[in-house]
Image (cartoon, rainbow, N blue to C red):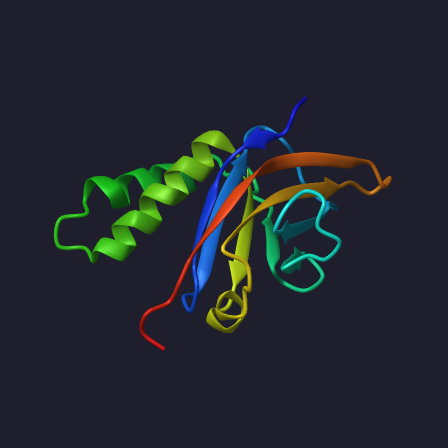
Length: 150
């Protein structure tokens, strides 16, 4: 299977978060790594995110059945007067229940994005299973937007 192609936009000076979902794939025990480089042939990377440095977090979604799923749906349907955040969380809970999807989240602090010294680049994100097998999950280009307020 070829890696998915997703282009990223990162704003310097802002916290960066992005979540990807791998449908019907159990990522239990996996680790992940990602590097952003100015070009494919660049010797050095601009930033490296891994599960070890907390730049990548793999959330394992446990299958939920019955009552909890019904309660999540009821929370969405009865969201009149409920805080918007609670309603969104309830929708996410229903989606997780229905799809049983594991999530892969990227994180860069504002300090990390401020330090990016390239205007654009390329990246790929690899997943490594317990046996050491590497799967290229996603790849693409990266556009880095300069910061105005410092």
